[in-house]
Length: 161
Image (cartoon, rainbow, N blue to C red; front, side):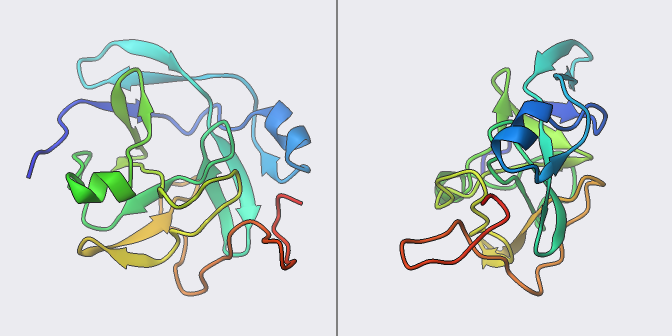
């Protein structure tokens, strides 16, 4: 199993993009602007800001476009344990060519989430571990009551309204 060795640490400071809140119906919070990220080699680069949204299970972190970010229970350090088929279903959130590490956890997208506000990966037990959205604190969002994805043609609602 190939492990990713280069990571980007994304600090919680500077979370959110005010413009994203306006574009998405006001469901995000936090300060605007870009967050700085440090690499394992100690250098610092600018990265796209992340945003915090409120959903059925509480606050969770997205990329600047509103795509949900997930953490994997098998990752016990800043090193990803997801590779091969896993990385196709759960692609890494990358900045500056490296996987972003948020509050000590590598973070990922769920390939089936196609639009901002989709949360289809929440609570899935896949590739030997539990996948959950990540809270602004870096903790896993409780997986007990899995939220729904964006509205379908048959109706429904989401916080992205």
